[in-house]
Image (cartoon, rainbow, N blue to C red):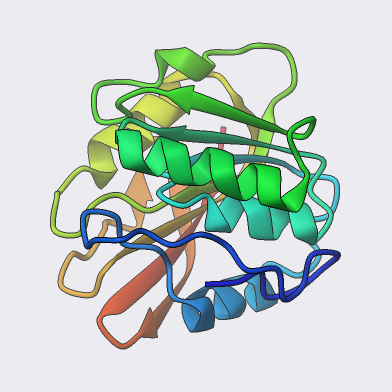
Length: 184
């Protein structure tokens, strides 16, 4: 696993030693960021179910001004910290240990709002409607923020969920990526 583009292009990231953490494949990550060209620069990024932190780190490499990584899995938190340190971005990154399946009270409005969000929960978990609802209630998103959701292709999300409207959907084998716009 590596950073695909930007200032840290080619930088190797630590990967999980087992399958309890499923990082986004390099090919899928590259495709997502090709779609997001123009959105990443100067964005404030939220990476939910962050795993290895690869999505938020890719955004930082491509010009995001900061990233917040949220996960509750101890192995994931360790990987995220290690990968942030390898890239030298400790001053631009924050790690929060939190269970995003409960709520997102950990990010309730704290000043600067998020403009770009990555969500990659465990596949087939059925969590997306409640996570998007929590994100909507957090008051932590800019109007028109872009939310990228990675999910298994058999788990189809509604076109409108809790203040979010579907803008695009792309298929990469068994992976489906849905792009939602925050409409509040």
